[in-house]
Image 1: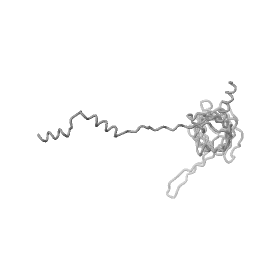
Image 2: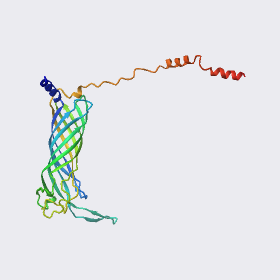
Image 3: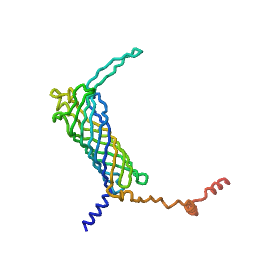
Image 4: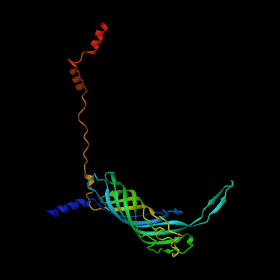
Length: 291
């Protein structure tokens, strides 16, 4: 008997699971402190798997889930500046900076723990959602290059005293999915906000005297978290053809008050209460007039 109950429960619950594959591109950026001249690094690819469990109870709106993403991250850091002073026609001088950039790309595995509130529209054929996640990451490999090939590019060698393999942060996003039977296709945009540093700070690794061209910093920054902006296409499959339990819950309508105020009854009650009560004020005024 217990086995039957467990099987039936599993069948009902299976309708709430969706597995998706994701792929897309975006940009990455590093926030150095003290502040350095940097720019966004575009063309960062991302691929992954996404699992969601949608609550069968409608009062808990949304889903929880787990992602496993392969993400290219990185930054472009201005290692060289050739300023030029230009004088305009009015005699005003302006300094124009000609930067050359060192670019570093990092290949990472990212593991977001996701909460996804959502709403359905178009007769349950469209889902609109937001996402919030706590993200953990592991940096697999990295490469570097200099602008205009001024110096040789190549593989970035990780050093335990200098580099951080593990990271963490927060993520937020929004998107939509079109539902076609058990399949769904959608678009999503998310922003990963890093809290950990890609480089260990100068208290642990001050100088690059023993480094090669892979490290352009004269000394390590105090902070070096990385952010990601990613645009993704999602293709998913729901495990049960019946649909989500939330679709079939009929919420009771709020009953309005049936009692109405009977003004006539209230007025009649007050008039009958005055009989034999206080004297008529109009009569009192008339007696005073005759006096």
